[in-house]
Image (cartoon, rainbow, N blue to C red; front, side, top):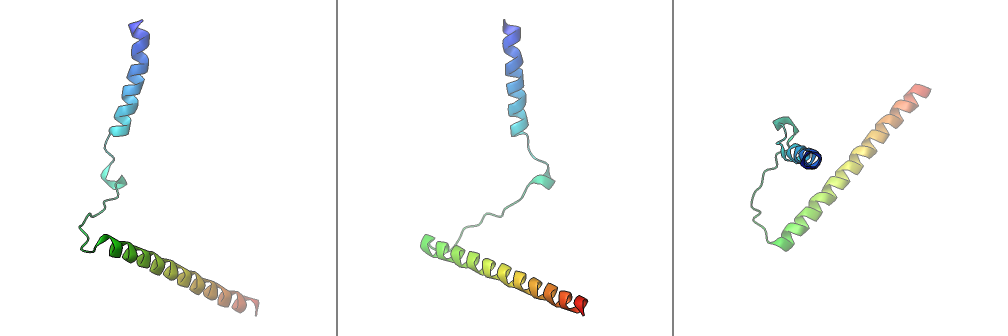
Length: 78
């Protein structure tokens, strides 16, 4: 009976060792941790403003791309 019980245990151990094996360096996203000099409420506001600025930048880039492709389409139809 111990032989049949050891097969699932070995599979479980193999699964655990696979899950805890370190990832290769090229698969790791290194994030720099740093202490933020702002109080939490100001940090939250800063993060919101950064997110809003990023969203506006993406909208601007999309608009610019649409205008560029619109000019290209007009030029091709003439």
